[in-house]
Length: 290
View 1: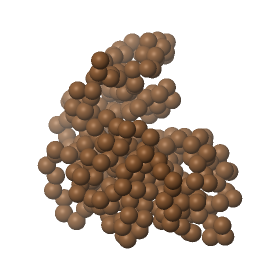
View 2: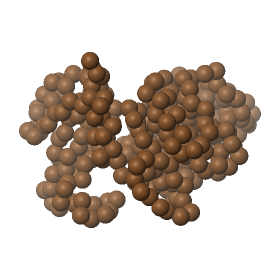
View 3: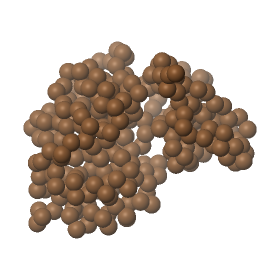
């Protein structure tokens, strides 16, 4: 029997959308997307304007092991009376996902574009992505924060590692921008498959594998995962970095930032903190005295 997931779609006011997105993720959503109402598709805008009282659909994608009935019951108890559910199988997951995946720019020049979309943009860094059954197209705030950080990073000739690579978008982006050696690790076989496929699609040479004994002398390390493993893997990440190397961590809620900073304070200096929709990204530098 094919593996399946399910979507839960809820219609909310635009001002309520961020809170619902965070609520979905807190209950185990693999991805959350905001669908543009049909009447706004006539206008090409990254920030469509919503009229007062207009409802927009927020869709959470969950694995089949999650208790769907409990989530629906909770939403109903909150007053949502238009909750829709939909089962999604392997064979139509990718098609449904790509229907909501559009070209997007991160920072000044880094673009993420669906694999089959015609796109010509001179003097820009373009990453073509076919997410398959992994995630990472830039739609989630933490991925957006990482891509914007990558857009502004100088990686030419450097060694980059992405721990928890998903679709491979960050590692591929680093290679597109001129990184010399790129390593992508993930524990999910679907992510390994998707990252290799996307690397081939972009014609870049990167190393994709399950986590291995950590490569040394890394100049820039991304870990867009969760606060708990970021803290648990502190010594592994720091040991992998060259002296003065940069560590970019995300997947953190705002209220988890101090906990992560406290853990890393002995070994790394905070360079910057970015926030988006309740999520945070920390850029740190390995202390030179280590």
